[in-house]
Image (cartoon, rainbow, N blue to C red; front, side, top):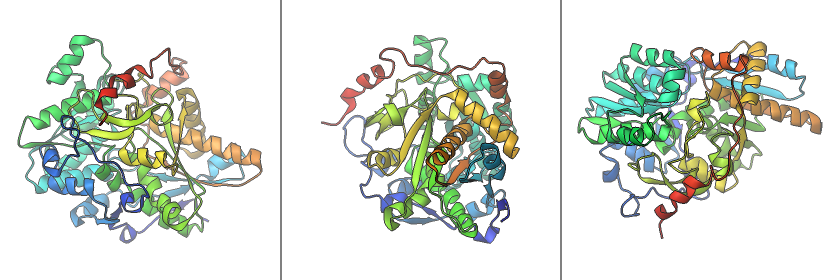
Length: 453
């Protein structure tokens, strides 16, 4: 069997898969923060084009990918599925390990899978500018590229700690034509309020979202785009898992375990939802494991409740596992995973026991990333190392139990512009994060009043 399994571009999926159609318990609706009533399309119209809003609330099993989007996808799709024989050999495992590699996209990650359709639908509606947030910079880079394809201006609010840690991500966004601002900034009320209370704030995705939303809501020709969390974003990413389904068939295999990191949920959903369909509708035994950082453990230590998607409270209230929108995550290098909440869909699936979640410390993840780089020749982004670390755990566990498992994970991005993270790891300056006192519960107590009665 060849190590790499490719698809012809004619085999690229023509529809996205919507897991909502097959969920036994449908997700609870987002609520208006003032009335606590379900939001309607008109409530979301100031931020999103109508076609994306319709996808957000859709229960259709499959939604067609526009031809213009498919044409741009073909710059890097279909992406390869790789049998990680090098890693298997290093681990001495009896299990089979596969990874779907998304690092060959223009941004070096999976993020353009949703950035391109979001820019496309905005262009159709005549939008002149899109604002967004970015954690590690991968989403901001992807949207910058996508906006360049459709002649749309792009403003990116980048979490300050990543803005400082990853300067070349900013350069990439600038190269694609975007304006990039460290968040919190003095450009918005949300940013100014944060800085007034904490002049040295390192920022968070919640703060950056508030800034981007505020700017979009104040200009009729500007819309907002989100890189994860929302249903339509997860929907677009399912092209990953659908391609992997076909490739696993060609390999004569089906995964026992599907693994991906989870910050907001798009990466995990992209690889896992098409396989989860077989578990829900076909009775297949497949474990889907979301991996989060121990420093931001919303799935493993948060609570399922309504909360804002942003720090300032501009967004609708979403039913999700959350640490509280005021939670301040530690300044780890895996910036794309430093988000206080998980997507509505992933949260409901976890609540129903259809997926699993684990939280890992960053030193174990970087160690796994180095092992993988030596074995497979790819330096993974800090976010992606979380998935690799869990793969290694599962392979070792299977060997200890005397069984062989087929493990599939999504290698969501390369680390070529994240080398400072590896430099810090090798210098011994990175530390694992341990919570103190009520650090995890204090922000949750603040949102108790937000819950519908």
